[in-house]
Length: 232
Image (cartoon, rainbow, N blue to C red; front, side, top):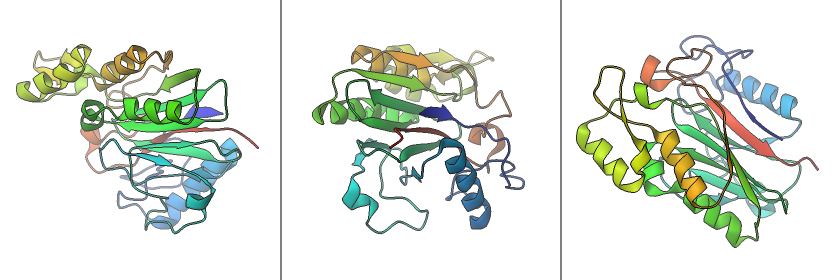
């Protein structure tokens, strides 16, 4: 099972209106809990979250970690990628412009997720995830990349675009008004393909489409998610 959510059919009220799944954005905890329960009912599995910090650390979700304490946001740990081979749970990654990445191995039970914003893309978070999954025995990885802010809508200083382009040249972009921009998703897709991982890219710009939460568009807002798991 793998899916990307939107903001429809949740219980949160503005500025988090809809299916906000982020417990760290200032929304009412009861609303987030209700939204997460709706997600779990839809996917048929409990969903595991990490506290994301725009880094490249990979959290290995095993039985011992699941039995351990959770952070105040309900996370099992801190990191911008997770991997597991446990059936019956889903891994979730939260975004509101950043790129959600779902990876699974067709030859084993391994699944993984990554949260790739500009810092994570530059730090190679998706490559760290691929490396971790292959280190655990994956041999036939495939990825799905979800909606995120597009290059036309992600204006940055020229120096920031140049730094990103040193890591992923295809990420260098231009906005609608002709200023410097970064296309993070293109950089992520290029990194995955360069690592030999086939990619399905789901279309959609979070800033242009109000079906998604977008920090660049709205400032204070909720989070949508990518989720992946193998049913028991």
